[in-house]
Amino acid sequence: MESAESVRGEDAAPAGLSRRRLLGTAGAAGAAGLVVGGGAGAGVARAVRDEPVALSTVGSAYVPFEGARQAGIVGPAQAVGHLVAFDLVPGADRKAAAALLRRWSDAVRTMTRPGTQPGTQPGTRTGTSPGGRDALPSSYDDQIAYDAGPSSLTVTFGFGRSFFGRTGLTGRLPGALAPLPDFAGDALDPKRSNGDLWVQIGADDALVAFHALRVLQKAARDTAGVRWQMNGFNRTPGATAHPMTGRNLMGQIDGTNNPKPTDADFDQRIFVPAGGSADSGSPAWMAGGSYAVVRRIRMLLDSWDHLSVARQEKVIGRRKSDGAPLSGGTETTPVDLAKVGADGALAVAGDAHVRVAAPASNGGAAMLRRAFSYHDGIGTDGTPDAGLLFVAWQADPLKGFVPVQRKLDGGDGLSRFLRHEASGLFAVPGGCGPGEYVGQRLLEG
Image (cartoon, rainbow, N blue to C red; front, side, top):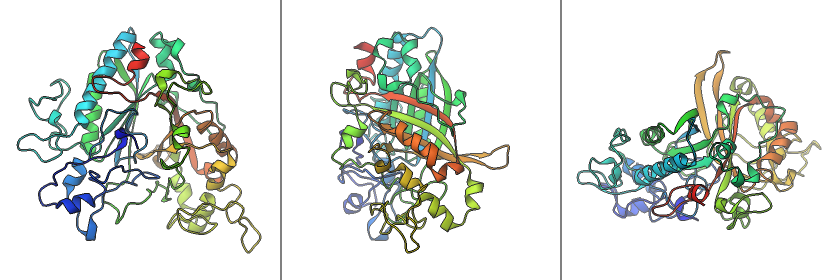
């Protein structure tokens, strides 16, 4: 697809790993080209002939920062994720915001760039070696990820609605960034919602992801402070025998029906077209960009686990073992919403999640879901504070997330086991080229 979503490895295989094995390993993804899947974990590493996967194949995988679109949207969600919102400090103006976005973009450009320094493993970033030509400023780099390669690191930047008022850019505020409507099932914490700036960090190594988070936090000092932060995870590359759609904390395969880059209308649904979009109120500076809806969704796991597997499957509309729809077939078989069982009842119940969320039930509305699970310990009520950091991408939230969530809010059997605790909507502009920074067309246009 776009170059910013092509995960690439090194031309030379790491020591002890033949080039043939490297080409057969999805985690390295070098000459294998694009790694795109329907859900989290779809691009996991896999060795041929059931041989162990060399750890260096995970570290050497990289995603280019520069491109027409930002990385971290189309590719499969990585093993570790950090979602962070920042608010500009009092007195920080448009000029200060532009300087911050340039610092951030330069730092990410360095952290995601592969290279080799003497004595390092293939894939080690030149920016993590002391004195390297691309080295991060010493005030940023604490060398947490000193020994690691990029590990598929991506960092994605977005702007919240409040950003435009704080920087005097209300005349460039996208109409599509209108506040999301209230939903009956919401129990939102305003302190963990919205924000001036939003950052999504993903990597297949926890230290690489944490290092990127620390670098951005340090670079933001005196300009922006953290409003909220959420940390998530997915399966580690190579944890399954073969690439497969990931599971959520309810044990369900999640992401099967995600829009795919091969769909004829994929770009139209997910990205703002060149020149902007008058229909959605997206200005030209958003060309190649997308809108991210971020929701922290707590799963009431203790209540869910009290259900029998058969009852869980009825709530979802899919078999728990393999993700196949209850209307028959395999995981990827289209759901037959009209099928009736031998007892005369619908094979997929009227309030089943897959029925209520289906594009056919929502006037064709669809969005690209790219989520992380989270677990923040045991809450004061004695139940797990765990669930989903839901990130949905679309060209227009009023045609993607909003109609689907309205339908789910009123008729989804799964909603009894979920609690929406935080929410945000962010305009994520297109990518940047060499020497540019993300958001430059907005801030300097």
